[in-house]
Picture 1 (cartoon, helix red, strand yellow):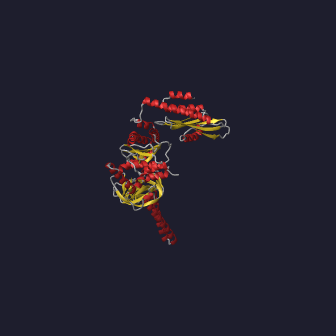
Picture 2 (picture 1 turned 120 degrees about the vertical axis):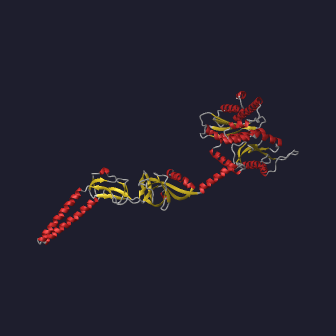
Length: 606
């Protein structure tokens, strides 16, 4: 096993590849179903795990990862026994530290081992510890070899942007920065926070997987970062060295509180600038016997400051829709409240005025509806008695005068009947004379009665003869009736022949949609424009609104009637047009949105 690790150290191309190979080889040696590794390398954090066998790795992952986290804080190898539910297999967690060249722990390795008996785990734990030490030594040699071969430095100008491009999130980049600085600078703790809308958002604290915003330590760090943001210069709080040439910025109360909370450790906060403003704050904590110097702080600031732009770039590239919206609103607010940008401020003021007018203003609301012109009064000319149509002198659209012949019924039978009645009257007259001469009063009375009956029938016949010629009842226009194709046909009593309307006295029927019927009431005014002459307008006043709906043009409408005088000689009954009803003032937002709101109410509901 030792020889395998040495061979792996000779062939590995990087420390990451080496540690991954070591983890797989050691797990295979112990027949471990699950193993995990955590190492803080000089420029990155190496986290690996592997599994084998039929068991689900998720079964072991949570428990072993928790054991590995505990092992990072322990000075040596450690073990933890577990009892299986089946009772015939005993399981243990084994862990050993990974060390750097100075002997300080930079990580740990942990694995699951299953033993068939209750044997002591001290022997496999000692083997694991020895293998971990050999791996640590080989990794240190590999790191020195690669450093001397490549000669890379953390101060390469494009390294910050390169690392940002390789990071999946701002937190991942910040995690790499803090852990790398902790190892390089020998600090107890390194934290970095991003300036977001004038406040500090802590992205990473070295040694911690996450940031607990409400913990006391995080609160002290955030408060100190915000104090440094306000000061816009490095702040150091430490025991002042004797003979120091120039004291650094100190005496800040929040930094003093933080120093007291960490038992007098030396602490420093460094602002990192990007785009001519403070973009991030870096905080460092060291042991009291390792104070900071001005030169040291300046070098750290110069080295780390390029990462501020990288953090901003990564945050903008990975932000979601909600964060993008919040940032856009904040940027707009900054433009409006900050100096300059007069044109944008003027545009925003105009937009605010328009928005205020839209919400609180009111405008006249005009309802546009179709309408039809109809006569106010129309007489229906009907057949006075059963007969045959003889002539049709007038048709629909003709202007007629009072007494003008519209049509005639066949009166030959009536004329013959009249002649017969005249003859009967003459006969009864002679019979009366004979009875009178014969001194027969009864006969004379009978003849006189028959004569009166015949005269009555004659009057009826004369009346029918007179009504057989159908005439216009008044001056007007024939709005309905064309009998030319019915000449010679039999017409029955009461059958409508013509509809005659006077030349004056029209009214307009407005077709109000049922969605707007509540907006129209009697007394409202408006304007009528006919389709035939759109350049002509006529004002009107609504007289009444119908209570029952009618179906017109496949629409359910309510009829509102308008009595008006239309002085147009060319006007005809049935003409259509457009009417605009002035329904009063309404809020601007309601005029613009009420139809959409009604649509949503009708179609999106449960």
